[in-house]
Image (cartoon, rainbow over all chains, first blue to last red; front, side, top):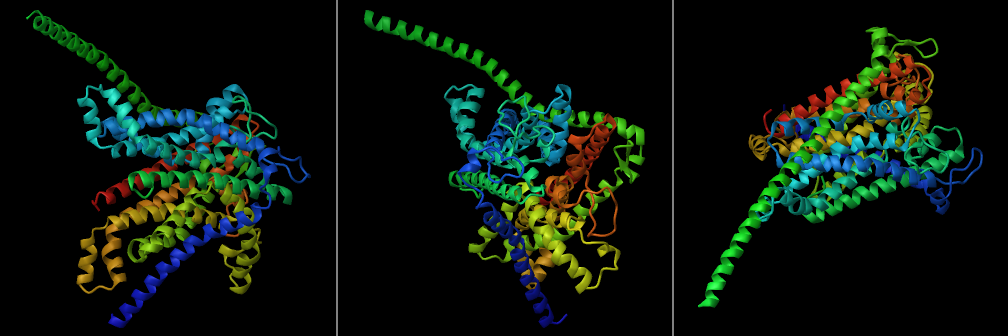
Length: 281
Length: 331
């Protein structure tokens, strides 16, 4: 091959990687653009304080869905945080134990499960025996999703704590468990909070596992044992409807949901970066 | 004299007390340590138990349908809840085709971006581009679905599909035949491609960064152009890691539910045409589960879920193994 040809190929291929970079950023820009253009007009005070309007009427809001998502996320955290942090502590402190290797691997497997599978699992475990949909079932499905995320974040953050901190605590007469909890875990806490926030950002937008667990609710409900509205569910219902009013509401809901998710994950990212001098994940 | 005696006695007794206190504390702490160990081990064990429970619940619930239809469940093309006949072949077909198409669209882009970011990008542009691509992974799938159904599908129906049929005159090929509905396999593949792009590119970037400098310097020293360096020295080194990233993306695509359900058209049919509507395993469950009236229908949907469970676990295990092998520099 002549040198000229090789140089030409070089230039073409390098240009193509630039083109790939441009194309890869375009979908995000398009999606953000449409969200802002379509959603911004419908996001107003009423959107956060009013209930959904009946079919055919314009306006209305998603107050119940916003609160509902908050409740489901709380329920999910009640399962995901203790288990995730506990398992993360175990993995960080018994790094080479055989059980740790197995748990780490299965945690990855759990993380790779489609969310819809967790949905049918929660349905089978909670909805079927009790014969009605409930916020609890939704919380179980999302909590199971949260566990591997929190586990991994906790393990990584605890590994960043210098061993000398633990040794210092032990040298001062702390027992092992107190050294773990009040020195190591406490030092890693900001990082773990960050990881927990990322996990919340990830599950808050989930729809699939909620369709037949939390189910959605057109009315105001905060009871964990009743069907409950959720922002992603409401967006889904509105998006597949044929009405323009509802499409506008769906855009507004999507804008609010994405805003919520982005604010949390950006805040989490910057918090980690400034603390540990790392670039997020 | 007395004074110092008492002091000595005092200090001796206080030392005894203190050592007693230390003994007591150590006794207490070893109990505490044991409890702490039990509790963290218990939380760690929760993960395997949960996974087993999920598998058990889903497989047991799906068993009636699996045992009734046998292999026919996966080869049958008729899905008729009213008459109690369930063949999941169209959903299986749709899941595989939409995911593979998505990978075909996304992989070159993702690897291109990864190469750009790890080899060519000026420092000031590296961060923002990496950030924007990563951000794609943060968008909830229902938002992708909304954008897909209200923006992407109309664009495909009015511009892209007519372009293939009329401008390129490819309408007679089976791949592009049939009416242009809009919601279609093509729409699902496009949305999925956007959704898996950040996963593939993140893993590829990581793997490319792990390729030793010496590998690059050696190629350049032999007179390779920059591209030849990448193609002949860097990519072979990173290959199995990149494939791992692609398979990880495949795992995401196979299980992706909402966005696909909203744009694929939801029809139990196998069609060669990319413009025809289809179905995927995840979207069958999402669509029909809350309306399933009889036990067999529920069981059939559970069986679909069980199959999805198996496939995604398998795919993820392969992917992690490949990435792990490259990341530790074995390949």
